[in-house]
Image 1: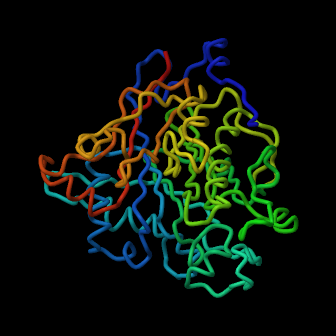
Image 2 (image 1 turned 90 degrees about the vertical axis):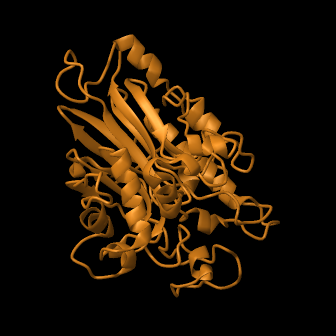
Length: 386
């Protein structure tokens, strides 16, 4: 069972609220937080201008104009081992986001960029897929299967945070090395009747996060909003043991427990405990969990949608999703897996999914969204609580 405290009750009892800019009495403008999975954006694509996918993704971002943007699936080139004078996330800002992608658009120069290390493609030294071989040569699927998080080379499918507001990097907390077995009530596959399972020795070393779970404090005016970034492993791609579905469940659960103040957690610096009860936050990421999903035990509903520690309902909608049968969809397969969910002390002044109906899309934005990714950008405008 997850450790659960109700922040909503705490905030109601104390009358706490957050002013995102100015003072609590000033009625500040909302700040737009967003998440976007750009689908395996590589070093070769972003380090120089002219890549069609990167241009399409930048077009989408410039239309939405988020102030704080979490990116999923941008290669961490420092982990990849490619020598450049800037990270891929910074190159994406300079080569694409800061350059208007249409005459009627304005570039966005995100001054602050944070790129955490990722478990993807980081070799575990173990035979995790139980095929009898510890494959430590990067470049193929069998190597990726023996990494802490699937990646055919280190840093593939990594995360980044772009912000117009300063980031308190000294206060960042990451949980990349948190061991799955240290989560109480975890769903680790240990049954050796299955083809894939963790032995006791493997369970003592295996990390929960397939990429990383990271808390990046964003300094908005005289206040702080903790941007919580994650990208859990997708369910599927395994057998009847449902290893990935179980891992996805517990990866989604980690941040639910973190904002509830769970004391079992420890970060990569060894600091124990969860988030302070009076902190404000926004969960941003492709959580690979949709409402009603069986193979991860409906983690989205339990830990996100029905959790009073997140302001999750109603979910944002789009015309493009509606045309395909699910107005709340954020992914091409018509499910909701990408989220921008604030803490209950923040008012959502608006929220949306950038998915126009292609046939009626203003200025061709629908075609750009499809060319950029199989995911859609999700945003939420956040302002002080009442």
